[in-house]
Image (cartoon, rainbow over all chains, first blue to last red):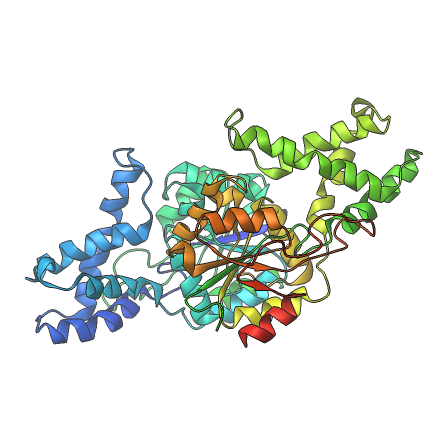
Length: 239
Length: 239
């Protein structure tokens, strides 16, 4: 078996397991209509997401102490509202808070729930996401994702792709890095995990960024495993 | 409803949910026989457990940086072996490691799995234990405890009853302390949680320490709720 010795599978979540673009667009659409903003909801989701990595970089660089993603999302939302011509100061704070919860209401791709259920029979399964714990709990409860635990940036106190995000996760599991396999749609995430000694499984999601996606359309290295979705992954692992 | 406004139930685990004394005794019995140690396995479990709180006190006091419970258990095991006349230096390290995993193999009281399943329909449920994450994962997988997340000392980086163990758990959940209820068999744990603003539910476990138990035989304060077990708790919460 190609993943011999692996005892835990940890998963990237945004894009790999859940459709953040479609979910955020759905949640912001009524708000944009109400405020008569002429911005496509999916493009608003893209703009909000573009601020994701730069905001984490403040933490990764050490310029800012660890700050959970809900807080970064909230700050990035205010900036995105300004981008589309809305002054967040003129909007009730509770309404912006509610909008920020869009990230807690994302739906998984169709293969995810059944795939995770099968994979759980053979491995400890947990998210290794930059999303914070309560965000991961809400996504999991919404769709019955059968996690054994919620791991990731908030537990490790480090954002991917910082090595500590992977290495502390393995340590928390009580495992060597090569006993843990990262499952992700993003080649850069897989590379960072591999550089920490993790095993790697690539599940490309070619519509994560919509129909015009140009990045991560396929596996760009010889990852330990490449599968079209989690069901196919479970098939080969025979779980 | 007596727990109006509560959105998450967090649980003490050792004693409240699982029978640590019986489980540890079962796991150490073959070892004690093999090494011809004339010590009752349950009394060995008691002796090992007596070193639990003092070892955490080193961390709680700040004299020692946060150290996960598996490590403290391992150190305490060596001391307990010395107590019964065995020099741990003469025993293969792998054998002591295996013995230390006794705490990962504890079974729940009979009402726990069904009770948690019912409670999960109305609340976010998570352990708030001093046990580390991988220990909690192993106990949960063994008996299908349906946790939404593994919270507790390792996530909060603080051992109960330090206030930070409770307060950081509420913060991680994105909730005010009074939106979280601690479920525990131990009056001291409940008191510490109440002092942090948590709601409290007492589930006495009068055989946790065996037939001669003298402490925590009943609720010693007017906790928000007292139930004989988790099924009874779920009955009243109507979940």
